[in-house]
Length: 291
Image 1 (spheres, rainbow, N blue to C red):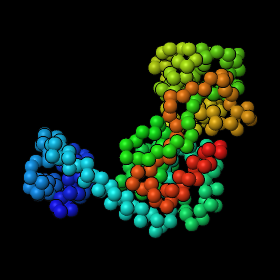
Image 2 (image 1 turned 90 degrees about the vertical axis):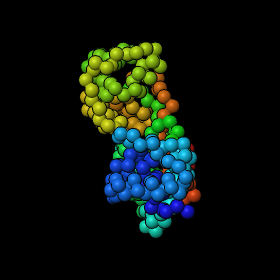
Image 3 (image 1 turned 180 degrees about the vertical axis):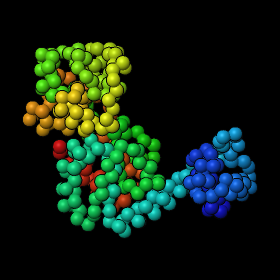
Image 4 (image 1 turned 120 degrees about the horizontal axis):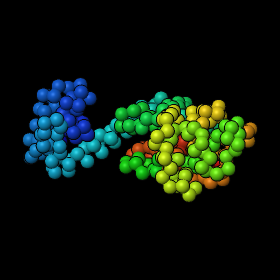
């Protein structure tokens, strides 16, 4: 076996394609990183990196070694993280603010009643979790479900349609056809959902680029702005049934479009048999099927 320290340096350098960044991550000098790589190259019988001015690039030999080494370190990290979290009895769920506020928070109590031995901690943010470096067990991620190395289970599709307050609709005499929406302020016109919906409604290439940008970072915030009459938002209807029933929002058209995205339960493939993850996976898939 080659020295573990050298393999650890190689994995970091291969991931960053940069000796300096690998050194910063590991708390080493760049010279120490270069030395460990040299030791590993002597053991492997050939160069592992092509040295360039600002970065390094794996050679064919380096690429053959990088995959198994990275997988081995991921298994080690996963095993250690699993043991640590299991010992603490804490299930850490990363989730975006919209899904957390409009779906998960209303249901997570039933999971806790079924699993009183687990404490649940919600990490609410939109950033994409790095499971190898963050103490997170599972995440609810929006997208198409195709993330290499990660298991993904569809929890809820994410169709969308325009919504606005009744008062805003009345301000232009009502919204009777899709073109009427263009008379009003569009909340986040850069959202690609708009073009998908308008195309489904028979309008190709609607010009929204020149409109003032109003990115709020989360659908749930855009919905609140729409309720306040600040503009038209494009939202997932199931999340706002209460607002529709109470008349705080109106859905002027039956047309609901989709680009294939949804909300997915995501975790590393190597942790699929983790007791906490298995319990949460079984629960959320069952509850989502009943919703």
